[in-house]
Image (cartoon, rainbow, N blue to C red; front, side):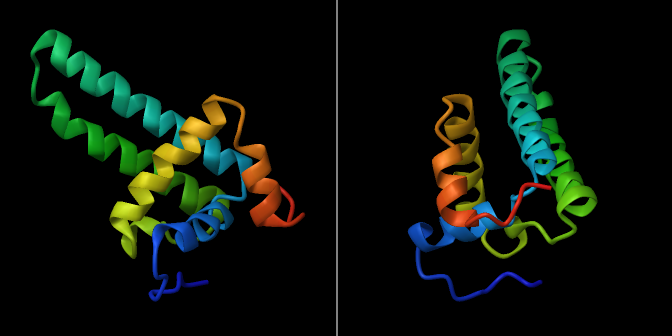
Length: 115
């Protein structure tokens, strides 16, 4: 299913983003992608190996898109809403890391399951 192109703001985008990430395996791949970005940026800064900064978005998008194609079977929201997707990615990861994602999923998935 194609992502709507007329979402007016991030607050309206957030529930859509969560529905595009209903599969726990896809979310886990996204968390791995976010951790990979942090590791690459940290390593790049500590080792003064600046080419690693180029690898960060490639690794992140590659992993996240893998999760969508393999587990969700949908197109990543990044293709339609790149900046909101990036913001939602970090919000989702932060909420998951602090144990606060479940209420958001419960509210926005409305018992759709977690394949």
